[in-house]
Image 1 (cartoon, one colour):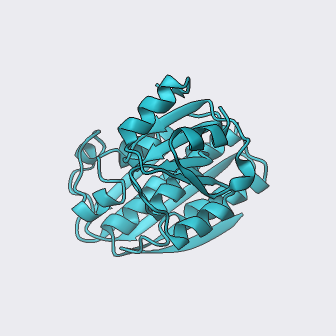
Image 2 (tube, chains in turn brown, blue):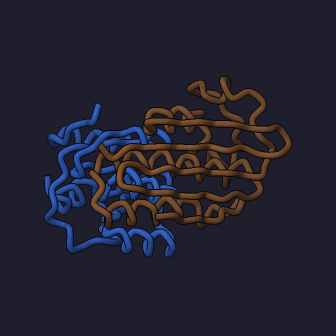
Length: 137
Length: 115
């Protein structure tokens, strides 16, 4: 199964709508609850990151019998130093983002701990791509 | 502890999910930081106490399988939040007490922390 969602930067009202849809879908196909939770927590952090940092983005979901593969691509400022961004507590979030309950430098570490595989690539001035893969067994 | 007992201990009111008032809560987590809430491992009988009242509070709990949210210090859930909570079959409680006071009362009454 393939699905695609469009995300707009700064659209805090709909932030999480794609993650919510994916959660319902994984429930419907009978994926184990702990794997669903890991997947949607990683995805939600990544989705919020697009809303917070980028101008717009797309989320592509590919589900087969053994795994879910999620590719989040955004057009945005990019990440100059990915290793630094992966460190707990490092954040470039604005006060508005902190008011939403994020921006404590936990997003990428949270994604990493909830993904079987996490690949982040970025080009400054162009955008960032995050790939999350979780296996069902 | 049943949700309706929690509500009476904190002089709160249920604004969504009245039908679940006899459901039981075993553990409680208190935070305004949603990234922190997303790290909590729970068994679906967990309640969140928070002073953060916006749509992301509801979304975060949806992702974390947390069904009951207690808003402290008179924070009020917006119409959009109520709708999203209803869609996800959640219980929202509002109390005028501070997070510290609510935490103290519920801890003393026997509700356990997650960590």
